Length: 254
Image (cartoon, rainbow, N blue to C red):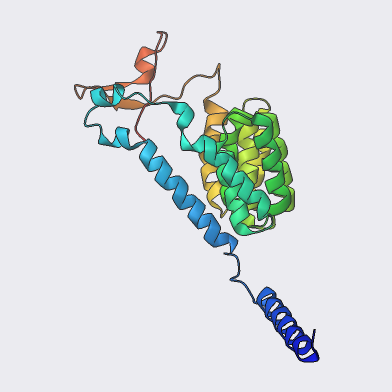
């Protein structure tokens, strides 16, 4: 090969190397932030939910609704629970991950041990996050799945780790409620502490009703008297039926 051709070939190789190196170092578009990805996941789930429940919204009567056949195994919550958990794991330590973990615990209905594990994880990582108050508020509802003993453990841990007063108050309230059926003395002690140390919180305001339930509405206690009217507008009192078998049915729409 002639010297001129060597120079030409070398120059071409150098040019291609520089070009390739420059291309490799070209900054790429930054990945979307966790908040954006989480919002997209939420919107996707909401759309799936709306499509799944569309027949119920379209029904014009209870009779039409009763005829709707639904394959509950295709409830979007089943598939999306795993997606929210995957997101929470990938973006651990961020606020969107905390929200995703809350969503997962709400959706997962079958794996009790997994929910317990993720609830403990939430307490470890997010006790002082903006989502911690919502988590504390939801803890009493976890009792049906995790059991009251697990909820007592979670609320105790959350109360000790959190620094926000509202979070600590709701954790204390949840612990007291979880003990009402098993240890009324401990439940009352927690309610009293809630009123004493966190009296200005929303949780403390809710404690009054729970204390009334604890002191007056337990099995074996005499039911508190009340007065109301029947379907014809005639007034009557519960005590009018004392000594008789009475079924009191409270119901409503939520």
